[in-house]
Image (cartoon, rainbow, N blue to C red; front, side, top):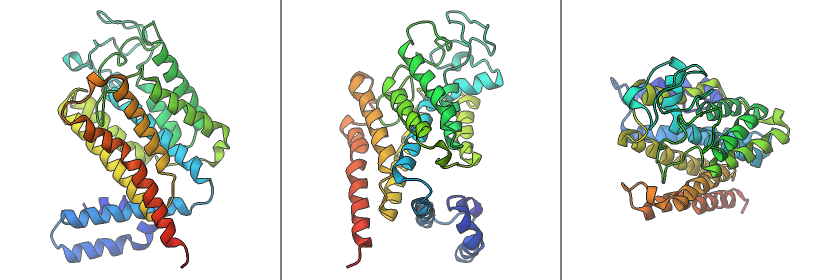
Length: 319
């Protein structure tokens, strides 16, 4: 199981020092498949720092372009989360029955129609999924139409659309703040703007990520769809909360290690989208945490990352 820890580190590091690291772990903790929690946290932090340094050292593209790319990836993933179950059920032709997210099953085929539902061509969740996959592979020209369709679907959600009402009027996952659904144009609008910038500015220079980054997405779809974990399930809400906090901590570690501002851009966009949902629907706010704590978790990372980058750059300057 220790080999799973190597995935946190970039490939060049694994090639040079992977076996040495595994040998040290086996010698220090004989008979254990995982190191103690403190050592595990240190190894994960080291992997994030190594990846961050490798990204910052890559001069093939400006830092702000990479920051916008990270922003689009984060927002596409955030937009996909409420509809993981719907996409999983549609792809495998599964009738969710009573496990549906506040809507009834309308079938896999475009002409299928269930009681009390509108006919739809495709589930709405396919749009952010296509956007996410295209952005992972650096294909902003594919992600841009998907983001534009998300904006159109959100602006016309009260009317008949190609996506019907399935997955659009149901509750979204809360995570850090109020739920975000398809008609929240702040999310789809910022995502569309980011994709437009990426598509306009030399798309061939975008970073291409491995398809392996889709493994967590597939796992999340299995948890939501295969195990029927509902959108309003406390387990999935707590899980998303933990993922979002972990991502904010990873951005801070990367910024503190490199002094690079690129990770400030997705954190700022994430804070804006989440805060907008809270302001727009304060009565839908997640009541399991005080609103002040969540707002601090959203806003505090911005100055924290800026200060961390400035201090790192100050230490790098010759005395």
